[in-house]
Image (cartoon, rainbow, N blue to C red; front, top):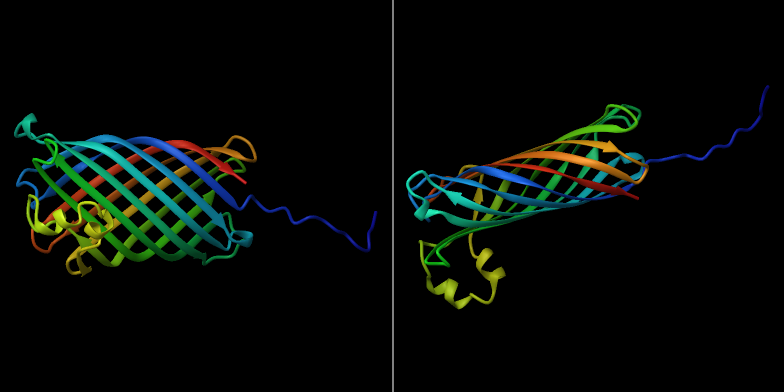
Amino acid sequence: MSSIYIYAQDQEDKSNSISISLGYQSGVLKDANFSPLNYKQNGSTYTMEYIKFGGHKNSILGIQLNAGFNTLSTDASTYFDTDITQVQLNIYYTKRLNPTVSKSAIYLGGQLTFEVKSLDWENTESFSYFAAHSIGLKGIYQYNVSNTIAMGASIYSPFIALIARPPYNGIDEDVIENQDNILAIITNGTIESLNTYFKLETEFNITYKLTESLAVKANIIFDYNTLYKGNKWTQFRTLTNIGLAYNF
């Protein structure tokens, strides 16, 4: 009926999560360096993500890799259909802003993003690329609907970026000289800020826990990015994925 001392284990949620998902990517793109045409893009997308929560979920460290293999098409003619390969790596760290007793959680921090997009028409008869390596602010919101369902949203926008593009549509001396050194090609660019380069990426996700260690995760990402400087680049894409998450 009474007790002087009570002891109990502090049961915390699992602090690590690895997820793999696949889905569909669509959007529009215009690269004035490549063509004056407006293109639509459609194709597959793949995502891998690792998340580590700090004690009592006071922080989040995340690494996310997206890869897409798409086809660009235009209303002008199927003759101008172009292959596009897109790879994006995000590394972010955020700290929790509100008390841990709440069912919802708000995080704020920073993110590093490395993305490369390569356009290829007729086996490099015509080609272009766009590489953007940026740093900016990352915000995350999470809400536990129940013991098995959780919803979340995030937003990222950079304030400075290194942008690498070819000087024109075709082979130039720098590309020929570094054709065996891809890293040199995608980092040979200029520093751009908000007045010349803008990117806004938002993500919405829902997770359904199957067991203590396994969950189904679905998400949708909206990504808008544009470069005002020189030959304009503008892209808007939507990535829809579903996959499995392993928590440990």
